Amino acid sequence: MADSTITLVVPERGEVRVGATASATSVFVGPDVVASATGWFLKPEGLCRGEVCVPVRDGALVDETGDLDVERFAAALGLPVVLDIEEGVLSFGETADVRADVIATGIAPDFELPTLDGTPFRFSSIGRKKKVLVAWASW
Amino acid sequence: MLLDREHLLGELFGIVNVPTVIWIDEDDRIVRPCVIVPGDDLFKDFTGIDSSVHHNQLRAWVVDGVLPPLSEREHAVVPTPEEQLARVERRVGAHLARAGRIDAAERHFARAGELAPMNWTIRRGSMPLRGEDPFGMPFFEFYGEWEAAGRPGYGSADPNAAS
Image (cartoon, rainbow over all chains, first blue to last red):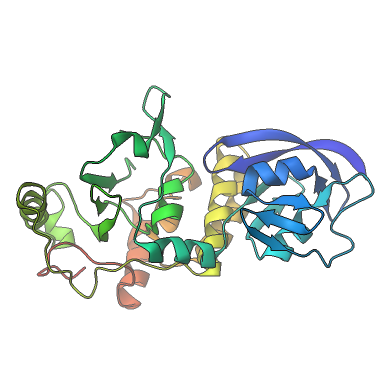
Protein backbone atom coordinates (compact mmCIF):
# COMPACT_ATOMS: atom_id res chain seq x y z
CA MET A 1 0.00 0.00 0.00
CA ALA A 2 1.31 3.42 -0.95
CA ASP A 3 0.26 6.86 0.23
CA SER A 4 -0.79 9.10 -2.64
CA THR A 5 -3.53 11.46 -3.76
CA ILE A 6 -6.42 10.90 -6.08
CA THR A 7 -8.89 13.23 -7.74
CA LEU A 8 -12.42 13.03 -6.38
CA VAL A 9 -15.03 14.30 -8.84
CA VAL A 10 -18.20 15.54 -7.13
CA PRO A 11 -21.17 16.94 -9.09
CA GLU A 12 -21.70 20.08 -7.00
CA ARG A 13 -18.04 20.77 -6.19
CA GLY A 14 -16.09 19.74 -9.26
CA GLU A 15 -12.72 18.14 -8.68
CA VAL A 16 -10.78 17.96 -5.43
CA ARG A 17 -7.51 16.23 -4.63
CA VAL A 18 -7.74 13.98 -1.60
CA GLY A 19 -5.27 11.80 0.26
CA ALA A 20 -5.51 8.09 -0.41
CA THR A 21 -3.78 4.82 0.25
CA ALA A 22 -3.65 2.68 -2.84
CA SER A 23 -2.74 -0.84 -3.79
CA ALA A 24 -3.01 -2.49 -7.18
CA THR A 25 -6.63 -3.43 -6.56
CA SER A 26 -8.09 -1.07 -3.97
CA VAL A 27 -8.04 2.49 -2.69
CA PHE A 28 -8.66 3.66 0.86
CA VAL A 29 -9.66 7.22 1.74
CA GLY A 30 -10.62 8.91 4.98
CA PRO A 31 -14.21 8.72 6.23
CA ASP A 32 -14.40 12.51 5.95
CA VAL A 33 -13.74 12.20 2.21
CA VAL A 34 -16.57 9.78 1.54
CA ALA A 35 -18.85 11.79 3.81
CA SER A 36 -18.17 14.99 1.89
CA ALA A 37 -18.84 13.22 -1.42
CA THR A 38 -21.88 11.15 -0.46
CA GLY A 39 -23.32 12.42 2.83
CA TRP A 40 -22.73 9.02 4.47
CA PHE A 41 -20.82 9.09 7.77
CA LEU A 42 -19.06 6.21 9.48
CA LYS A 43 -20.43 5.93 13.01
CA PRO A 44 -20.26 3.21 15.68
CA GLU A 45 -23.70 1.99 14.58
CA GLY A 46 -22.68 1.78 10.91
CA LEU A 47 -22.81 3.99 7.84
CA CYS A 48 -25.34 6.74 8.48
CA ARG A 49 -26.97 9.51 6.47
CA GLY A 50 -29.64 11.56 8.19
CA GLU A 51 -31.75 9.18 10.25
CA VAL A 52 -30.79 6.12 8.20
CA CYS A 53 -28.01 3.82 9.37
CA VAL A 54 -26.75 0.72 7.58
CA PRO A 55 -24.88 -1.80 9.75
CA VAL A 56 -21.40 -2.61 8.47
CA ARG A 57 -20.92 -6.35 8.05
CA ASP A 58 -17.82 -6.18 5.84
CA GLY A 59 -14.79 -6.55 8.08
CA ALA A 60 -12.49 -5.37 5.30
CA LEU A 61 -14.34 -2.06 4.80
CA VAL A 62 -12.21 -0.14 7.29
CA ASP A 63 -8.44 -0.49 7.56
CA GLU A 64 -6.33 -0.21 10.70
CA THR A 65 -6.06 3.58 10.33
CA GLY A 66 -9.82 4.07 10.07
CA ASP A 67 -9.82 4.73 6.31
CA LEU A 68 -12.45 3.14 4.07
CA ASP A 69 -12.06 0.93 1.01
CA VAL A 70 -14.00 3.04 -1.51
CA GLU A 71 -15.41 0.14 -3.51
CA ARG A 72 -16.44 -1.82 -0.43
CA PHE A 73 -18.02 1.37 0.94
CA ALA A 74 -20.04 1.81 -2.25
CA ALA A 75 -21.02 -1.87 -2.32
CA ALA A 76 -22.27 -1.71 1.27
CA LEU A 77 -24.69 1.05 0.30
CA GLY A 78 -25.42 0.08 -3.31
CA LEU A 79 -23.92 3.35 -4.53
CA PRO A 80 -22.65 3.58 -8.10
CA VAL A 81 -18.93 4.25 -8.05
CA VAL A 82 -16.21 4.61 -10.64
CA LEU A 83 -12.64 4.13 -9.48
CA ASP A 84 -9.92 4.43 -12.10
CA ILE A 85 -6.82 3.42 -10.17
CA GLU A 86 -4.52 3.87 -13.15
CA GLU A 87 -5.65 7.48 -13.64
CA GLY A 88 -6.17 8.21 -9.95
CA VAL A 89 -9.79 9.30 -10.30
CA LEU A 90 -12.77 8.50 -8.09
CA SER A 91 -16.42 9.50 -8.29
CA PHE A 92 -19.57 8.35 -6.49
CA GLY A 93 -23.15 8.57 -7.68
CA GLU A 94 -26.51 8.29 -6.03
CA THR A 95 -28.64 5.14 -6.07
CA ALA A 96 -31.51 4.89 -8.52
CA ASP A 97 -33.85 4.23 -5.58
CA VAL A 98 -32.98 7.50 -3.88
CA ARG A 99 -33.38 9.42 -7.14
CA ALA A 100 -36.71 7.71 -7.77
CA ASP A 101 -37.88 8.59 -4.25
CA VAL A 102 -37.00 12.26 -4.82
CA ILE A 103 -38.80 12.30 -8.17
CA ALA A 104 -41.84 10.62 -6.59
CA THR A 105 -42.23 13.47 -4.08
CA GLY A 106 -42.99 15.83 -6.95
CA ILE A 107 -40.94 18.49 -5.17
CA ALA A 108 -38.10 20.17 -7.02
CA PRO A 109 -34.79 19.49 -5.25
CA ASP A 110 -32.71 22.53 -4.43
CA PHE A 111 -29.32 22.89 -6.08
CA GLU A 112 -26.47 25.33 -6.58
CA LEU A 113 -24.63 25.99 -9.83
CA PRO A 114 -22.29 28.78 -10.99
CA THR A 115 -23.38 31.61 -13.23
CA LEU A 116 -21.29 32.44 -16.30
CA ASP A 117 -18.93 34.59 -14.20
CA GLY A 118 -18.55 31.83 -11.60
CA THR A 119 -20.83 33.29 -8.95
CA PRO A 120 -22.67 30.52 -7.07
CA PHE A 121 -26.43 30.64 -7.59
CA ARG A 122 -28.84 28.70 -5.39
CA PHE A 123 -32.13 27.75 -6.98
CA SER A 124 -34.13 28.32 -3.79
CA SER A 125 -33.01 31.96 -3.76
CA ILE A 126 -35.70 32.64 -6.38
CA GLY A 127 -38.29 32.18 -3.64
CA ARG A 128 -42.05 31.76 -3.98
CA LYS A 129 -42.46 32.38 -7.68
CA LYS A 130 -43.37 30.24 -10.64
CA LYS A 131 -40.15 28.89 -12.12
CA VAL A 132 -39.35 27.45 -15.55
CA LEU A 133 -36.15 25.45 -15.59
CA VAL A 134 -34.68 25.22 -19.09
CA ALA A 135 -31.83 22.75 -19.61
CA TRP A 136 -29.99 23.01 -22.91
CA ALA A 137 -26.58 22.44 -24.43
CA SER A 138 -24.42 24.74 -26.51
CA TRP A 139 -22.90 21.81 -28.44
CA MET B 1 -27.82 31.36 -17.09
CA LEU B 2 -26.05 28.65 -15.10
CA LEU B 3 -23.24 26.30 -16.07
CA ASP B 4 -23.80 22.61 -15.32
CA ARG B 5 -20.50 21.00 -16.28
CA GLU B 6 -21.11 17.86 -14.21
CA HIS B 7 -24.71 17.33 -15.41
CA LEU B 8 -26.10 17.86 -11.92
CA LEU B 9 -29.56 18.76 -13.23
CA GLY B 10 -29.68 15.55 -15.21
CA GLU B 11 -29.10 13.66 -11.97
CA LEU B 12 -31.58 15.62 -9.88
CA PHE B 13 -34.45 15.93 -12.34
CA GLY B 14 -33.99 12.85 -14.54
CA ILE B 15 -33.13 14.88 -17.63
CA VAL B 16 -32.10 12.63 -20.53
CA ASN B 17 -32.27 15.04 -23.47
CA VAL B 18 -32.12 18.76 -24.23
CA PRO B 19 -33.68 21.23 -24.59
CA THR B 20 -35.76 20.08 -21.63
CA VAL B 21 -38.12 22.28 -19.66
CA ILE B 22 -39.55 21.70 -16.17
CA TRP B 23 -42.31 23.83 -14.65
CA ILE B 24 -42.11 24.44 -10.90
CA ASP B 25 -44.76 26.32 -8.94
CA GLU B 26 -44.52 28.75 -6.02
CA ASP B 27 -44.39 25.85 -3.54
CA ASP B 28 -41.57 24.12 -5.44
CA ARG B 29 -43.92 21.44 -6.74
CA ILE B 30 -43.05 20.11 -10.17
CA VAL B 31 -46.30 20.76 -12.00
CA ARG B 32 -44.91 19.75 -15.38
CA PRO B 33 -42.07 17.21 -15.44
CA CYS B 34 -39.42 16.98 -18.10
CA VAL B 35 -40.65 17.81 -21.58
CA ILE B 36 -38.73 18.47 -24.80
CA VAL B 37 -39.13 22.11 -25.80
CA PRO B 38 -37.10 23.82 -28.52
CA GLY B 39 -37.09 27.57 -27.92
CA ASP B 40 -37.87 28.32 -31.56
CA ASP B 41 -38.61 26.58 -34.87
CA LEU B 42 -35.05 26.55 -36.26
CA PHE B 43 -35.02 22.72 -36.38
CA LYS B 44 -38.77 22.19 -36.79
CA ASP B 45 -38.29 20.28 -40.06
CA PHE B 46 -36.12 17.77 -38.17
CA THR B 47 -37.92 17.58 -34.81
CA GLY B 48 -41.49 18.13 -35.99
CA ILE B 49 -42.06 20.19 -32.82
CA ASP B 50 -43.96 23.47 -33.07
CA SER B 51 -42.45 25.70 -30.38
CA SER B 52 -45.52 27.94 -30.24
CA VAL B 53 -47.46 25.12 -28.53
CA HIS B 54 -45.24 25.36 -25.45
CA HIS B 55 -45.13 29.16 -25.59
CA ASN B 56 -48.94 29.32 -25.47
CA GLN B 57 -49.16 26.70 -22.71
CA LEU B 58 -46.56 28.54 -20.66
CA ARG B 59 -48.36 31.86 -21.08
CA ALA B 60 -51.65 30.29 -19.96
CA TRP B 61 -50.00 28.86 -16.83
CA VAL B 62 -48.11 32.00 -15.86
CA VAL B 63 -50.93 34.46 -16.58
CA ASP B 64 -54.06 32.41 -15.83
CA GLY B 65 -52.75 29.49 -13.75
CA VAL B 66 -54.03 26.97 -16.33
CA LEU B 67 -52.02 23.77 -16.67
CA PRO B 68 -52.20 21.86 -19.95
CA PRO B 69 -53.37 18.25 -19.94
CA LEU B 70 -50.27 16.10 -19.91
CA SER B 71 -49.89 13.55 -22.65
CA GLU B 72 -48.96 9.97 -21.83
CA ARG B 73 -45.43 10.70 -23.03
CA GLU B 74 -45.01 13.45 -20.44
CA HIS B 75 -43.82 11.77 -17.30
CA ALA B 76 -40.89 11.80 -14.96
CA VAL B 77 -38.29 9.29 -16.12
CA VAL B 78 -37.21 7.15 -13.20
CA PRO B 79 -33.52 6.30 -13.53
CA THR B 80 -32.21 2.74 -13.48
CA PRO B 81 -29.11 1.59 -11.57
CA GLU B 82 -27.36 1.27 -14.95
CA GLU B 83 -28.22 4.87 -15.82
CA GLN B 84 -26.97 6.11 -12.46
CA LEU B 85 -23.66 4.31 -12.99
CA ALA B 86 -23.54 5.67 -16.55
CA ARG B 87 -23.77 9.22 -15.20
CA VAL B 88 -20.73 8.58 -12.99
CA GLU B 89 -18.82 7.00 -15.88
CA ARG B 90 -19.60 10.06 -18.03
CA ARG B 91 -18.50 12.37 -15.24
CA VAL B 92 -15.14 10.61 -14.90
CA GLY B 93 -14.75 10.52 -18.68
CA ALA B 94 -15.39 14.26 -18.89
CA HIS B 95 -12.85 14.94 -16.15
CA LEU B 96 -10.19 12.85 -17.91
CA ALA B 97 -10.97 14.42 -21.30
CA ARG B 98 -10.55 17.92 -19.85
CA ALA B 99 -7.23 16.76 -18.37
CA GLY B 100 -6.08 15.61 -21.80
CA ARG B 101 -6.25 11.90 -20.90
CA ILE B 102 -8.11 11.12 -24.10
CA ASP B 103 -7.64 7.34 -24.24
CA ALA B 104 -8.55 6.89 -20.60
CA ALA B 105 -11.56 9.16 -21.04
CA GLU B 106 -12.75 7.16 -24.01
CA ARG B 107 -12.98 3.97 -21.93
CA HIS B 108 -15.36 5.69 -19.52
CA PHE B 109 -17.44 7.38 -22.24
CA ALA B 110 -17.81 4.05 -24.02
CA ARG B 111 -18.89 2.31 -20.82
CA ALA B 112 -21.38 5.13 -20.07
CA GLY B 113 -22.90 4.69 -23.52
CA GLU B 114 -23.20 0.94 -23.03
CA LEU B 115 -24.96 1.44 -19.70
CA ALA B 116 -27.38 4.13 -20.92
CA PRO B 117 -27.62 3.72 -24.70
CA MET B 118 -30.75 5.88 -25.09
CA ASN B 119 -29.66 8.81 -22.92
CA TRP B 120 -29.02 11.81 -25.17
CA THR B 121 -27.19 13.83 -22.53
CA ILE B 122 -24.71 10.98 -22.18
CA ARG B 123 -24.45 9.78 -25.79
CA ARG B 124 -24.75 13.05 -27.72
CA GLY B 125 -23.51 15.21 -24.86
CA SER B 126 -20.19 13.34 -24.81
CA MET B 127 -19.54 13.67 -28.52
CA PRO B 128 -17.67 17.02 -28.41
CA LEU B 129 -15.43 15.71 -25.63
CA ARG B 130 -14.77 12.55 -27.67
CA GLY B 131 -13.75 14.59 -30.69
CA GLU B 132 -16.98 13.74 -32.51
CA ASP B 133 -19.36 16.10 -34.28
CA PRO B 134 -22.70 16.23 -32.40
CA PHE B 135 -24.31 17.15 -35.73
CA GLY B 136 -22.33 14.58 -37.75
CA MET B 137 -22.49 10.88 -38.50
CA PRO B 138 -22.05 9.68 -34.89
CA PHE B 139 -25.15 11.67 -33.99
CA PHE B 140 -27.22 10.31 -36.86
CA GLU B 141 -26.13 6.77 -36.01
CA PHE B 142 -27.29 7.34 -32.43
CA TYR B 143 -30.50 8.95 -33.68
CA GLY B 144 -31.19 5.85 -35.78
CA GLU B 145 -30.69 3.60 -32.74
CA TRP B 146 -33.04 5.78 -30.71
CA GLU B 147 -35.72 5.75 -33.39
CA ALA B 148 -35.41 1.99 -33.85
CA ALA B 149 -35.91 1.60 -30.10
CA GLY B 150 -39.22 3.47 -30.30
CA ARG B 151 -37.97 6.91 -29.22
CA PRO B 152 -37.68 6.09 -25.49
CA GLY B 153 -37.76 8.85 -22.89
CA TYR B 154 -40.17 11.71 -22.35
CA GLY B 155 -41.92 13.50 -25.20
CA SER B 156 -42.37 17.06 -26.35
CA ALA B 157 -44.93 19.71 -25.47
CA ASP B 158 -46.40 19.49 -28.98
CA PRO B 159 -48.93 16.62 -29.11
CA ASN B 160 -48.77 16.67 -32.90
CA ALA B 161 -45.04 15.99 -32.96
CA ALA B 162 -43.66 12.49 -33.22
CA SER B 163 -41.31 12.93 -30.24
